[in-house]
Image 1 (spheres, rainbow, N blue to C red):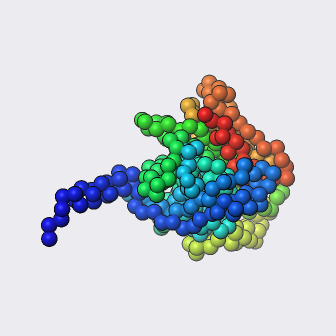
Image 2: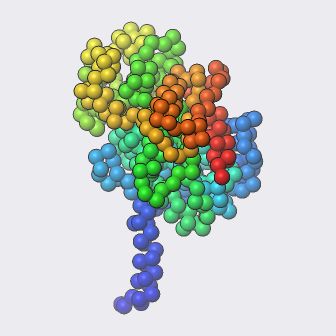
Length: 405
């Protein structure tokens, strides 16, 4: 059988964009009606809710090509949310906060509230003409590898490599997305967002309209590391910090073979390796870690469960230590951005302490980055915590993006 030439040409046209953009496939996973969007906007954002949506939005799970920390090619997944009728305001990339639970990956969001963070980000932007793209990251979504927590320089590749697949998918779906590009993210995703901007600024032909990193751990070796091991009288803050420290140690153990017992006592090391290998929810892991630490006599301080060697490494900022050296490579506060930035934080945040944001602002100001490019927005509300500050942070990011012309 001879295939006509025009058929061969058509096949070539249909297949080349997928390879060029990195898009593997796109699957519709849900629809949010305008009525649903508006009802959820009022429920989630309350008085901070933006203007009501006039169009429905569709949700798509994407798979696309990217690479891991060692440069190996991997298949990653992410979410694309498109307002019906197009997204003239442009594309917002949102990078999510810390989770171990694959069911909370953005690509798994179908419109139901399985992930309050993802839902809030979708609501904040698609309600008025933005498209939203959200990477799952390495080690989450469809990728079965190790999530390199909390390495923003590594994880930003999943956001950068999603840009063209998201635009390609939107074009194939007949949805016009404006050329403007916005970057934002929360918690771990705040640092990923800032690294995404920093990396994109080094790429020719790429322009970021504005970015609003939120509550990110930008100074990993100093502010963040010291806060994770600092004593606290709040047991919930202690449990959350312990979870983040354990997540870090488990990641470097699985990816690089570093011994967890070099950093925490053997009993605690065994618990860390065990709980992160059982597909438990974040809440279940936090509870098990907190119980183990309490039985060890931690008393809201990790001093009883960390090794003397690790305490010395932190006190002296010893970059000969492989973990601290890796964290140092992923610091993202002392550089000169050209993109318009709004750094958002909660002043009373006990998990990702606001000194991360203040230090970034100070370092960038010292590099003569002025207020026309860089501003800081501090939320002064002691009733909020790291989790509940997400919504007002998103509301501020949305206001900041709306002002850009």
